[in-house]
Image 1 (cartoon, helix red, strand yellow):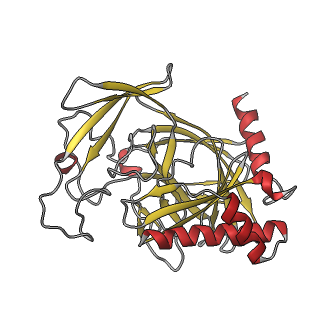
Image 2 (image 1 turned 90 degrees about the horizontal axis):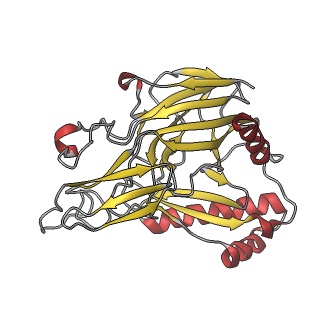
Length: 334
């Protein structure tokens, strides 16, 4: 088993997909142990640390990477299996921003009413009890919320020498902010450049669907990823697989176009896997599918289309790469 560890210094963090040289090379079959910083780069530590005062735009949402996967070429697919995602600190933060979030005026939704207050919430992370403790700011109310760690941002370099900010989700991945991207999930990303150049960041201790206020329970993470390369198979939009479901993503504005992209990808993927014609697959996904929301606050919105694998017969994805990577991860942890 080939295990590689990487803990970036603050200067080694990246804020884009594309436009940056790889921080290292890994072979397919590698177990990669990485540290990821929170979306504020660890600068927001108390309720008095307002992001507008302690952070500098555009240096938000840092990602760890990019990593060059040996042998990866355009037209291939990277499979990244998240073996574990563990909060790295005993605290996390969340915020409201004056012009960011689903329930406030933004630069694209111009309103005359005053902007929301900039406010910070600090959560206590208790790994032994597996909870994040919410504390209201204007009362003594508090409540334990179950931890459900995930990564809001994962992706590869876009094609055609394009550089995208890490906060923007699109066909390359990016800041999709779907709670479905938790430990035990395999993410499939289409390769656009030599080596793929994938990066991971934006850890969340937990997040509601939609990330309505614009931030989740933002946490630094210690994460373990199993890396595989699928040659000669392209993936048009980021896809996810867990033990029970297949999932397709779509990122765009308006939200209904993100919904359409994700549903279209799941329908066509289902058709390819099962041999059903397009309309038969369309009917199956229409009646058996789910549509979890990723985010409704980023530069693009993200939707997820989700279908139980039990309805697909004995079909397998990429010769059961998810099961093989899960077994590799189990061997690593045992």
